Length: 156
Image 1 (cartoon, rainbow, N blue to C red):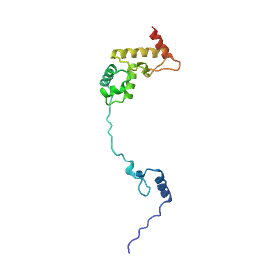
Image 2 (tube, rainbow, N blue to C red):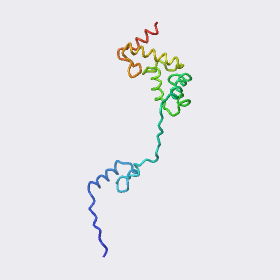
Image 3 (cartoon, rainbow, N blue to C red):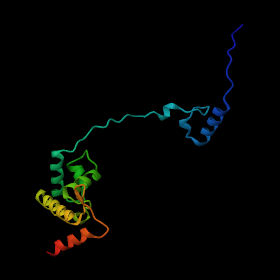
Image 4 (cartoon, rainbow, N blue to C red):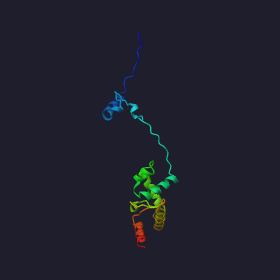
């Protein structure tokens, strides 16, 4: 006589969970009985992230890009000179070079390295005078201190 294998009765909570999954989950995420298909949650392909570091070479290329393409042309600078970097990353790096959180007043203008350094010095002086120099950049305040200081400089 064949040995009879006693099987435990199905757990009603598991059955309920499987039925609920069938109602709300994508079909490819489930096995036929409603249990989870673990293969669905495994990565289909693995991406290897290469570490990139910003150094002197990248600074020089950004200066060159600002001189050739101008402030705001981050996509062009990325394509031509710094393809491993995103436009937003270049905008942030340029913001630090110029010493100004907002680059709006510079958009479309081209600057040599010397001009960039002069703008940085000007922005730092304004920021120090107005108390708006934060984390190495000039930051606008609610009182319009920066705008007034810039206007005064333009009038001189």
